[in-house]
Image 1 (tube, one colour):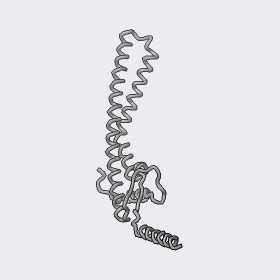
Image 2: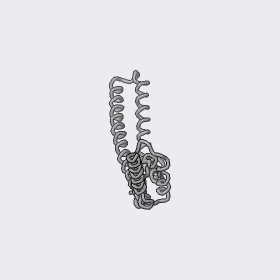
Image 3: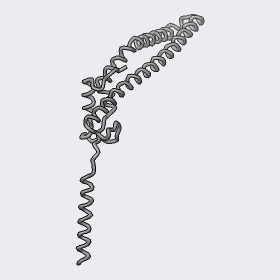
Image 4: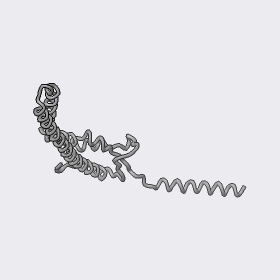
Length: 176
């Protein structure tokens, strides 16, 4: 009987001690941000997209015109090739081949330049977003903010808050 009382008292004391330890433990304040949404929906990302479209519109149009000319020449050769002399047909084929090579080169350069500029603009958007996220973390005393996770509870998702701050110009500065 005495040992049962001691065991019960000991269990009760340990439970209370453990409970007090948990009560005094500091809970970390955690949040999450969806970077993909920031890159799709934020005002700076939309501005960057419009800027890129304007910057590359002329080259894109020139490439479309060049592709149309190439198609037209090729169709013309297919249609009228039988009536041309062998020398004229060979010359037109060389012209088409040269134009195609030039087109492929210009198209590749266009894609490379566009990708490089897109990466520069996205890096600037992410830099601004990271500044805003850091400001939010400091103002609201977050211990940890993650940008990528397998699952994020809506209760800790602060993406909308970051989007609003970016739209209002918080954490701005030079975007280039």
